[in-house]
Image (cartoon, rainbow, N blue to C red; front, top):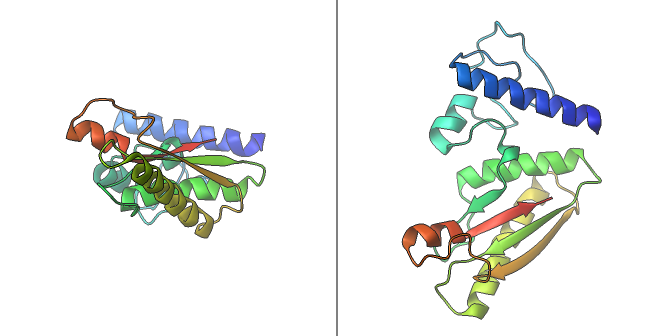
Length: 173
């Protein structure tokens, strides 16, 4: 476990350093293999995705390892997982699959629109959708779900921007 964590931290540090310096070279392409620094990895996929690090950053706003992201956002009145959130959830599923002792709670949330009961059910549907996706991607009975509905807003304002932040599933280890 400590060896894997050390490797993961080394990879994240290497990606961060290379992103900060603007170089195309990276020290790693995924969590299990390393590449020499003089190899151009701009066309190599990373973190078990079908995307390069540049594509993750430019297309999805994901800097470095998707495992560092712990919030998945949803459209209004929806429990459909978008592509960005799928990338993040898949990476967490990979982590859970490789760490049988790890446990995670998926907290489903909704914005304030709708009744309390409806929002609790929507938060549960969102958390369950992520749990099912992660189980299909390799997590094994390590997931618990809970819904808070509208009760724990990330942003208490009554604006579209706030509502977007509140329609989410939080990944809690």
